[in-house]
Image 1 (cartoon, rainbow, N blue to C red):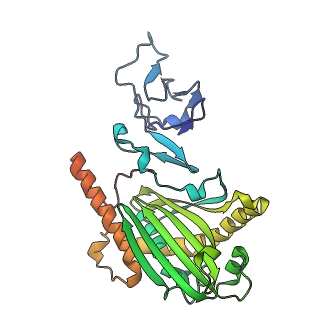
Image 2 (image 1 turned 45 degrees about the horizontal axis):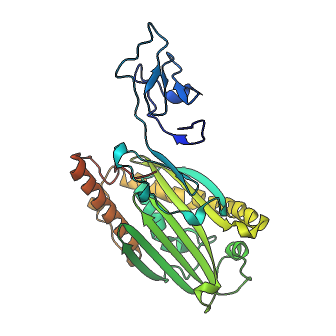
Length: 328
């Protein structure tokens, strides 16, 4: 991955076709990547444009694959499939966390668990009562009102609590008077393969939602292997808040990093160790009322993978794990 002289992101396969050295070890100059081993140079399209050896003739096979890329709402999106099928309209809308309009606190974790386990975790936030009882949860969460909706290929998992007493940290970070009861909503939107936006909001108990304040948190999971995942997350506060918004973004992301690192991550990694290479459904998981959103997303993802395989004539050994993602 690199930026060209115009500032646009470019993506090339990280393997020189000559002796298979990673191109990222090379040098970027004049919108060309020069291989560090024998000096072949490749332009942004992946074509070899310079051979310093012999008469300089360029072998016909001297090219590397280039991948379409787009930048939108502070994310870099790459299309890993056939280039002529890349459609920017499929990019998930993350406008509420756009750095052009909001201060964003951003962070990252490398998690030793499958990416679908990660999406399960966010789509069923009933766990915050138990796993995050001293930070994000309360005794009211598991009994919240649950709604699951599907619109096309988008799944919404919504949870609403009433007359809830938040933890002191959440009261402070959300500007809620200490000891005041609130109604809270936790609305998660999922798009394949693993792109989620959480709208978390509060009102004083009994007040209408439009009297409250929403905070948006992005959760984006990029599969690395069948059992490891790149986890990107960020929280947004409007720029109209000025320096207060900048401070809140940084303070909140540092605070969230603690439960994500010390509570979520160890739990998911322990879960992955138990599951191992087994297929999730063959283990016959017991399902609860709170699993509706996660199950809906899993089934939709499986359907989309199957359709893609039929369209391309491919068959993956573990499609739910190795699915070709529309965007990362």
